[in-house]
Length: 151
Image (cartoon, rainbow, N blue to C red; front, side, top):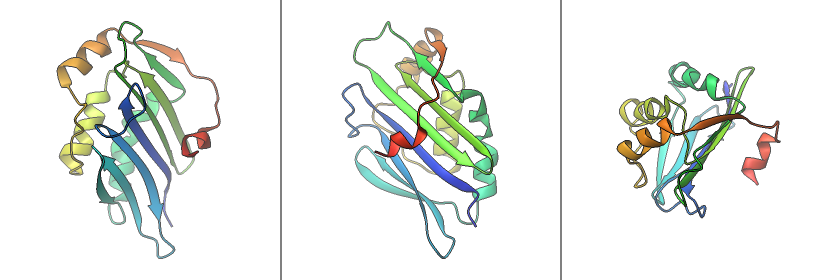
C-alpha cells in the first residue's frame, strides 16, 4: 500500500501557464505501483516511486518547514507562482509562493533533478531564485482546502 497519498507540485509563470514550468499528479494503481507524473515545459516525465517510496519520503522531509507557509516577494512584477501539496503517512505539507521561495527551495529542486532525474524547467534560474529568496517574506497560510489544488 502506498505511503504517499498525494503529491502536487505546480510552478508556473504569473499567468498560470505551465509551458515553461511544472505540473504534477500522483498516480497509484490497484497493483500497488506509485508514480508521479510530471509535465515539465509541457513534456511528460514519469517518476516511478514503487521501489523507492521510502527514500523519496525521506528526501521530502526537508519540506516539513514549508507547511502552512506563503512565500511572497512583492518586489517582483509578473514572475512566477508555485504551490506544493504532499501527504504521506500522517504528514500533510501545503505551501505556496508568489515570486518568493523557502531558503531550501533550490535543495528541493536539486533532489528532484540529481536524485530522481526530473528535467529542469525553463523558468528555473538559480541566480534569480537566490535573489528572490533574499527578498522573500514568509507569511502564515490560511487553512485552505488542500484538495482545491486538484480542481
